[in-house]
Image (cartoon, one colour):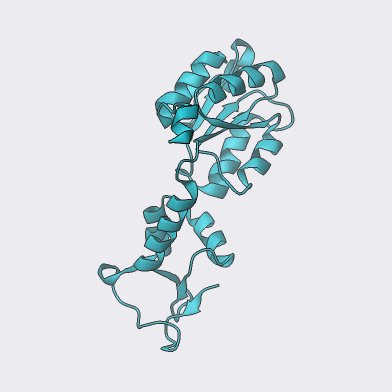
Length: 208
């Protein structure tokens, strides 16, 4: 919940960003998240915000740095998380095993609706592998909903489709990469290129 900046008991007078204050847009960019996500986190009390007399949110730089520091502590050593959204069970399983063998954590969804639900879980994915042709809601529609909810740069999305995709396979704005054939190995390579190689910890490494 935002505090009033014009109340001297709870905050100093509003100053310029050079002195440590950020607007909503500036703070979201500084944290690397969408404005809608920052609003949600502010309402949930995860990040402190102040309110101007006009009702606009302002964020103190020290509070943003403190939040980033606490996030780094929580995620230190965490494996990059990949969300695989695909209604083909066999392909999804192969991709999951291949990604896990490369050291990534994997979350699966068999439909676009399940994929959207997975995005709202505690730890958002670092990358989404998204099938275009799925029942009820196709991959492009899910991509639009993802971008509307989480912002354009919330996370990279790799779209893929089989030879029978037809016009649905035409690349559109919003996807980081398009894989024309749903070859599991190509999808894994795309993940490695976008997230970087991530080796599986060895027993010696864990012991050290």
